Length: 566
Image 1 (cartoon, helix red, strand yellow):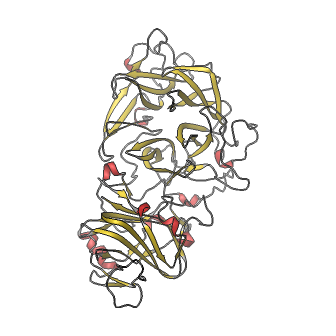
Image 2: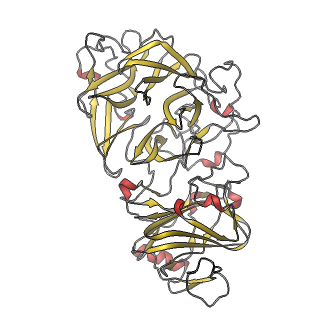
């Protein structure tokens, strides 16, 4: 706490009144029809009454880990993660690089603060199975419960052929031990259970159960690169390969297009040794539409990202949003790029994140989340860095009115945990908005944080005029406010460097804050995405109104505002 006080003292004397413009009033506005008052008195002290969580190059911040999280990439070393949720416990499985992929380890947690881990499947424990014993290379396991059994889907190297195959094992307990399935129908000891005389390797199987109970499995198959296929299941361990359908080829608009007609260049910019890559599928259903989400460009480089295609049925025609002349039209998350490998787009992202892909969707309460892996080395360069550790990260997922998902991430700055874990609820969407010297105010609380690669003109950002700008959020009752996050512009030429003040209807207010240096690259003129002014309120504030003031020398922009109450 003392470090925080000292830091704030260097920025602004605690006793100073913050003046927005000449005015003798020290009161926050109380009448909705009254023009904004132009000054407010500082009553809250940094380190005593609130904390500035915005990380900077010379400021060590602290935060309540029961209410906030940061993707520090140091807790769960599992690439290709999948999260299974049961009884408020989150079970994370993935490729265990630490064991050289010899077995499946599960990390489980109730709070995403502390984790326990346990090996839940090891084919080496069985005297005779189909997997290669010394080096099975188990990839991308996924865990599901169907009726009273738990099923663990995975791929491994087959002893007899040396090829990668998909199979599944089962258990009566979520943490296993898992063992091969053997009954009157199948023998999972002798052979992989999902085998259709594939010409190439298969991997990354994922299960999808539709609303009518029908089950489908999707996976990546290597034939002149890697493509996504889907098949209907007769049971959790039997596939009806007569229904097998090609779903996604990287670069084409849909799965009926000519394989040579590749126009989505960002999907094949970084080819693998054997061609373009589409892997790590996961099915997401929203507003009656089926969204096939997947990763492209190879897990070893920083341009590994998440794209999507949409269909009216689980095995139908999957089409990728595309408009001629536009880039990244079906990119959900990750570092954008083009097929010009000598001049990658947005190399400025180096140091922020790298290799964010191979994901899953899961829920914390009602909040949809994406779990994914990212390179531990945020400055990763595949030509000089060598192999890199990959760690679990997560961020929130929302949907537009038509059901299309969008992701506010990848993130590195502090983010509020969903309500079941933090008790925080973002009440900003409930607010009545009043502004002065501000336009496009609908973007203040629409949940959408603009990514720099989606809207080059920043048309979905909140526009602040030159001089003093005010945003007032009024609620229908008093809330206990625990924090705020004010997302900055995604564009270097438009981001706000300083926040003038935040005032509450109960008379409390705090002053000047500088946008975190660690979220801006001045050399390459780039603002890292989904970065914010972030504050944690340490005293009890009951208020029905929050007023935010900016003072700028030129027109600038911000993004989403979150007001966190409990």
